[in-house]
Amino acid sequence: IGVAETVLATTARPHAWDRVNTVDIELIAGSISASSEANVLNFANAALLGTEIIQFVDVTSLGGNEYRLSTLLRGRKGTDDQVATHAAGEFFVLLTETALARLSTSVDEIGQGFVYKGVTFGRSLQSTLQRYFENSALGLKPYMVNHVSASRNGGGDITATWIRSSRVGH
Image (cartoon, rainbow, N blue to C red):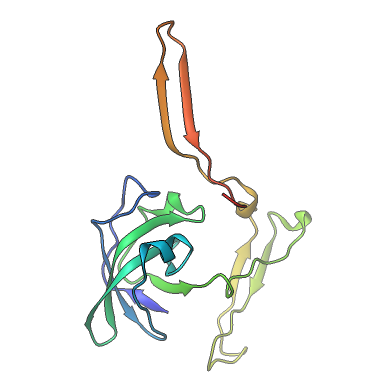
């Protein structure tokens, strides 16, 4: 886990490799390392930065516990609407597929609020701040489509094409 030392700039193409923008992270705990583009495409080096899930290939040590992340995939797992929301000081949490879990709730709980405590290493339940969470059913909504294009034929008809983004499979 860590904190963003710089602001990750927005991107117009969240589903393509971002080879321009970088973000500097100060780690509070844990470690990070570089990976290949192929591994990143298979969900390696995924992290929650603020409210956007990013993935990164390159890690450059800046000394101490500070690192610069680059060669990024942005807006992962349906967070493409969050690419322009970054600020210095936001949290950075490295994600793994085995460490992620979806809260099991019923349809009746959509729109209802609950209070949770996320207790981490070295903390007690009593010393952990509670957080309010309202289930908005975001996980049931489809991801945004990408690679949208349109063409017009000689008769004036418009044909639109896109690549769907799915929560399951491809």
